[in-house]
Length: 173
Image 1 (cartoon, rainbow, N blue to C red):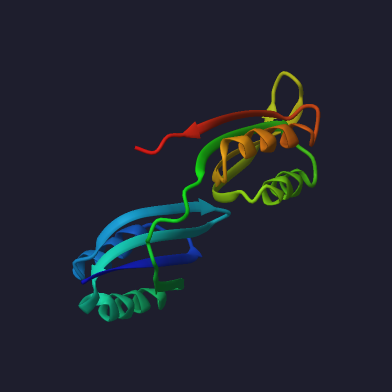
Image 2 (tube, helix red, strand yellow):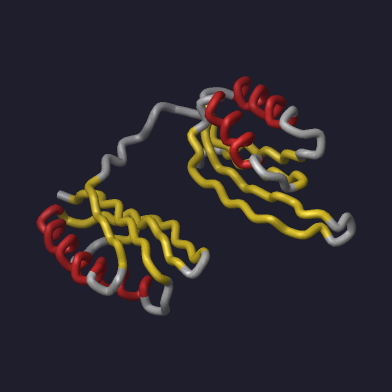
């Protein structure tokens, strides 16, 4: 019987980390289902969802532990991949003048509307024409209903007058 494992990886970035992880997964006949891998501030962080036969679970964990001896923090745990309660998925792009506390303000509104944040990418970029710094964020999440999504957008727009939001409803295939 197949089980699903979530592998988390963190450590100093260097060439070959992903290759080493893929080799361990392949050696145990695992199937790499999905991943989020990132380099930031000289560090490597990642989440990998893997399907593997239950008889290979212990072996894959042991081999991952051997990799962790190479200055990586690696954890593997069984996860339940049953579908969650039906929600409206959305993708949102936010652009505003950067200021201290903007992420807190945005995530507070998201939390108040029971948004499940599935992905949040952000960066600050210099607006050449204006000479100021812009905060940019892409958020993927889900919310209870379309009505609540519209309320969420209105409340986010009240955070600051210069905040622009582009929100797209993600259709399930």
